[in-house]
Amino acid sequence: EATKLEKDHPDDAKDIHNKVNQISSVWYELKEILRRREESMGEAAELQKFLRDLDHFSAWLTRTQTSVASEDIPNSLNEAEQLLNQ
Image (cartoon, rainbow, N blue to C red):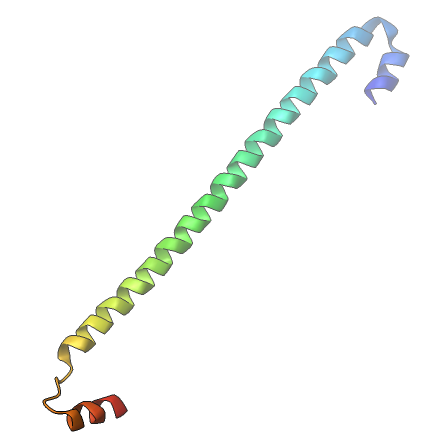
């Protein structure tokens, strides 16, 4: 389109060319900004997933510690085998 305009308006060809270069430059900058934001969003999503997994693990660990602390300690081999079977 710019080439057609330059041919149709030869007196303004230099200005048209300069404007096309400016537009291309701004377009490149916008694409770079978008790429960086997408990268940041990916990192944020990974961090959110990590924190959610950490929260689940922390809850599991708390339940497990409570369960282990409240379990009976066997006094003999037979009691130990019975607890293992349970």
